[in-house]
Amino acid sequence: METLSALLYLVASVCFIMALRGLSSPETSRQGNFFGMAGMTIAVLTTLALPIVQSYWMIVLGIAIGGGIGYVIAKKIEMTALPQLVAAFHSLVGLAAVFVALSAFYSPEAYGIGVPGAIAKGSLVEMALGTAIGAITFTGSIVAFAKLQGLVTGKPLVFPFQHHLNAGLGILTILLIVWLVQSNADAPMWLIVAVSLALGLLLILPIGGADMPVVISMLNSYSGWAAAGIGFTLQNNLLIVTGALVGSSGAILSYIMCKGMNRSIFNVILGGFGGDSGASSAAAGGGERGTVKAGSPEDAAYIMKNAQSVIIVPGYGMAVAQAQHALREMADLLKKEGVEVKYAIHPVAGRMPGHMNVLLAEANVPYDEVFELEDINRDFGTADVAFVIGANDVTNPAAKTDPQSPIYGMPILDVEKAKTVFFIKRGMAAGYAGVENELFFRPNTMMLFGDAKKVTEEVVKATE
Image (cartoon, rainbow, N blue to C red; front, side):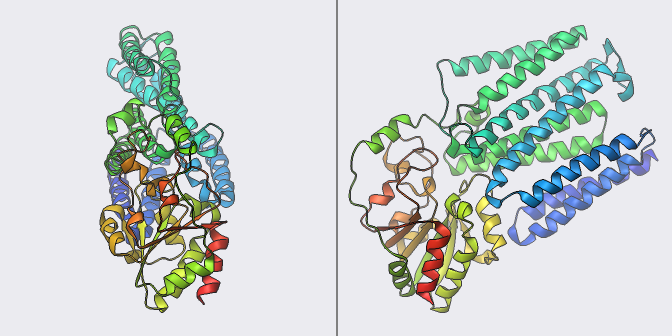
């Protein structure tokens, strides 16, 4: 049975690897999801068949409760709330790692790692690391959820000596792990939990709301490493492999996104990402930058119908309004008029990695029309129209012109280089980073004020 279970765990691991490979491309994402579900099914059934499982009623009860809650959430959740949902789920993974570690600490004989007060030193290190990373993931994800949900301000919450405090708590955690290994006592274990919970809060609170996509990706990585650490404690190879896959893939994605934003990944890990947008915001609101031209859907329809190339730039405003289907309909009409239509996606557009890609795929936008920043940016200079629908911070020229801006240095989509820019927005409010968009005042920009879906539908009617 042990050999068979090891073989099945290996098959499940291969399925998870194939899932990650499939999810790396929109064309193969459905296949990737299938491999992921197949791998998890094999893993769960194999675990339930192990001889160490003595009773099933608690397992069945847990699956029923968790599955029921998951079903209700899946039915009710709006697409725009997916980032918050992902952050909330990450918190649960971290909390589960803490609970499993505490269970192993107080009932080590059930895991074959010793007896209370005499647990193997290697196992203590593993469960301590799993506990620390899990606790950081839990509170950090709660803060991310609160920021995305609007329960906490999206601005960075900074205070003097915060980096010194974080460094001190990190060193204290290491010392507590050493104490735990040497003493096998309860006190250091619970202190590790408390210190790590506080560290999770302090690492994420200073990060600005505009940088939440990177934070979510990094928290995903943390949850994977927490699972891997607990896998060593449980002596479960599948949990180790799966946790390592999630941890490494999340870290790689975070690095790619940081590179796309010209940020340091070490700042993400240390909680120093983003900056205080207060000064820049105040400056933005302190004076008139120029004249804002407001247009109508009819103006946009006429100009785009007579254009040769149109680049559509979706953002969180499109997600909030659920305008992706109307947008695709508009694009289809333009293509019938002989207009070349492309979509430009910024690495951190929306509130989580791949947010815009998911919405466009839901609207059946052809994959070959969707381009990432590095592939599309050069085309704005020759485009007749850039049609921006709710993408604020990722199109803000302040990232290149204002050294005091919290988004300074972040690569942006060069929409201002298009001959005409149409910008759909409800009003003149600043973006999620709290920075006013210089693009609004450019002479080639025409604002289309209103709900993104309604305005796009009016453009569609005027195009027909």
